[in-house]
Length: 124
Image (cartoon, helix red, strand yellow):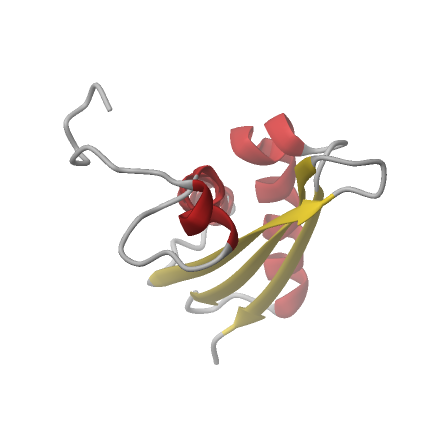
């Protein structure tokens, strides 16, 4: 990676389909990018709405599966969101989630080709 933020990463078919054994896969990298991007979009939506978040935690799972017609593909992305936002009502949180989903560049890049499921919890 040109930024130098990550050391060189080895990727193998085995890491992709069997056991990571300390290696990564393109799907893991896409999941990490999606989690980071969605977190930024949600933080922006909340802050613009007057409710800066204390914390946002996102776990992302990218599914890589054999396709019915042959070959393999990324079929879905599951985002599990937990946020602590003082003074925010559930309806406001849901609106911010919709804004984040619409504004997240990674969501926009995969939408229509990969199913995106966002499950979110607003911490009390």
